Length: 160
Image (cartoon, rainbow, N blue to C red):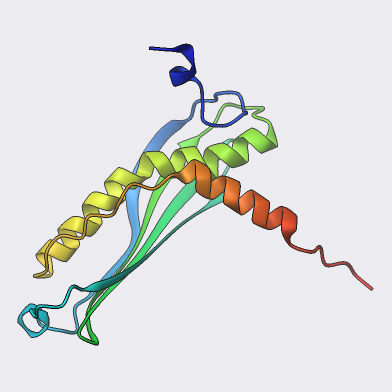
């Protein structure tokens, strides 16, 4: 093993966080089509959107929400729609620099929460009568970097 394998994926110093609680903040599963109605020889079209956001609480506590929306259609029929907001209540070390804190809350904590949300989505779709939807792993570091580049490229709006 090399030393690089233990270094964080970003240029930011490693900072820990404490997960105080994890919970389903909101969840919806709609299966407008009966599973037998969409059992055709056509592969389903599945659109998945995953986002993360955060809100500060008291002191150095934050709620981080991982939002998952997946919709499946087969032969032009809506098979199912699942929307999940899975949250974690985390505490960060006092005095964490803003740049590090932002990365921690929008990349590292979502990476930690993702396997739990993935399991909930798979179970809900299976319990809804469909094959379990197994979400592919997500590179939250790359998403964070893309979000930073998009924010830097966006023109600033000034008051005239």
